[in-house]
Image (cartoon, rainbow, N blue to C red; front, top):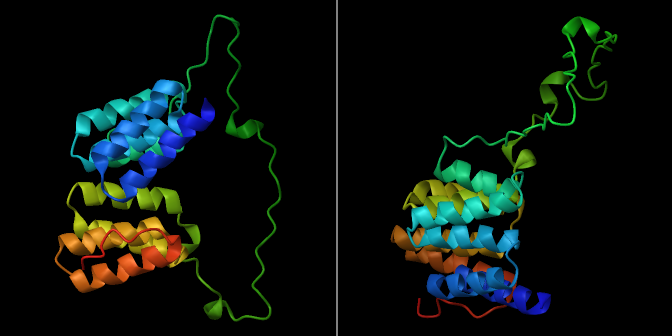
Length: 214
């Protein structure tokens, strides 16, 4: 049964990448019908609904995922992106039936002080030459990709392009980022750049090029 479920999920993702959203929804829903706790399918379904401009359906699918796991970070990031009022960190409710004693919170004075060791400068590199951290060093590829997809669905093409380019800076062969960046370029009428990105996506996946008519 899991093989059939996973097959529908894989097909759904393939249709999603190619922009065939009705077919993607059909396969994600079939996967969920076989496993009502398939959280990844709910996540993909929420993204697909958003691409179809079905905002409420996207929220409902995301909430179904949180019903399964309230700490599932991809869905929390998704909801935060489309509805910033939602907290990014889920609140954990501690049951009170099992104990009547509330532990005293740790006060600042209760924590033993540790002697700090002063940071020594690198002896071989002058301080002004030390490398500063960059945005690319800390990027979460999945989160940035999801942000780009959401921007694209909301027709915020400049923001979408910026997000996809961040993903590609960290992962130059990321086929989905190339594909969605091509979509952004198409929407803004920059067909030459779109063709370049499609060729790169095709080279990364070796799948059929959906834009052979360019």
